[in-house]
Length: 170
Figure 1 (tube, one colour):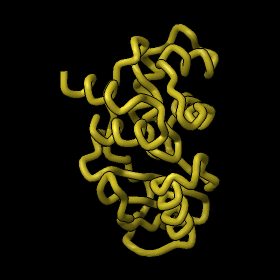
Figure 2 (cartoon, rainbow, N blue to C red):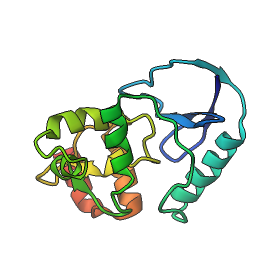
Figure 3 (cartoon, rainbow, N blue to C red):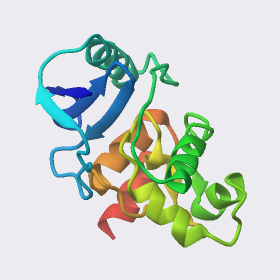
């Protein structure tokens, strides 16, 4: 199977997006902390799903879309995929702690494992790992960097801008 990838412009920098006939495989930020493991042949090119992803990402960044409707095909372990799909249950404009996410996947004592899986999410923004924050409300690590997490949370109205800025710069 060939997976097609291309860069899509966004307010948080160019996003490398990959898709095939089976679904969306990955979204990478310019300096992704955990690059996506490429198991199949990836090549630069176009695919109808890349065009649809661009349209939905544009609508999201313009404030016109709160939930994505794209076929997804992330590669990972069963546990990782379970965590990644649970991310889609976090409502737009809300945040969950790692403990809440662990509870959602039926593993209340596995906050660290859930956090590790969350950090390896190959479909950020679409599967909103940016909505997961520390139990004390603090912003925590994010593959696209904390300024990108800040931007996404502010865009969604999940945290007041002043609170996010205070956490980032104090």
